[in-house]
Length: 260
Ligand SMILES: [Zn+2]
Ligand SMILES: [Zn+2]
Image 1 (cartoon, rainbow, N blue to C red):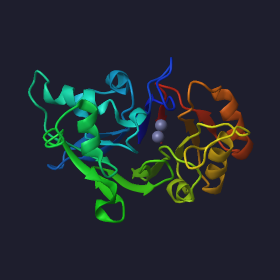
Image 2 (image 1 turned 90 degrees about the vertical axis):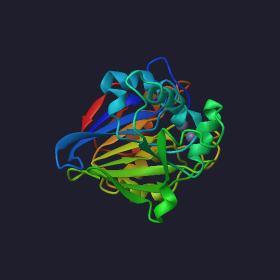
Image 3 (image 1 turned 180 degrees about the vertical axis):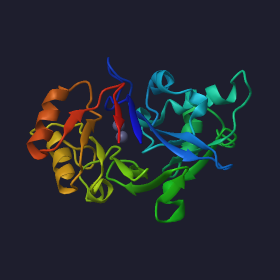
């Protein structure tokens, strides 16, 4: 699998990066048995659609997975809707968009569309809890979504293909769900938005130290710390995480590519 960091800025776009957006690609076969590259987009935060075009033809995206419906994770879906619906080559086929309950209505509101049909003619909406287990398949990707701890319904994702596994925390406060998500992951993309020692609200985000601690307990093989808000010094948060995780660890950076 190949992971490209499109946007990693926490809570709002920063001077070096859009808000959350990651491109995940793996080889698989299509319905006719032909080999091709499959491309998932994980989150589509503010400003992400612009930079996404550096890494992929935006019409070649197979599916979008939204961790939750805060603006810094989904609001550029409004622009992506325009791109697909009004493209000069014609309206594009519907692609799956996975998210929490209420995703279709949330995106319709964000674009000021009537809630019916909203964007249902452009996107095929699915909820992570529609199959009970939260597990589903897209091309070569086996995906498990698990609810995490955030003020709105929010999910972490565990995605496997080609025998390798990516775990993505989404936005979350401390929760045991992270241990299952990140267990033995080849790469754990984990948020760290808070600093130790601050008066941090509960059930919202992790500190750098907490992110590292979960990676250690889950025995994640490699860690990329993401979603640091521009108002914090990212190096300080990475240093915290290094106190609690001794394996390979670095900060996410827009444009970074990881072969998983
Ligand atoms: Zn966020
Ligand atoms: Zn959030």
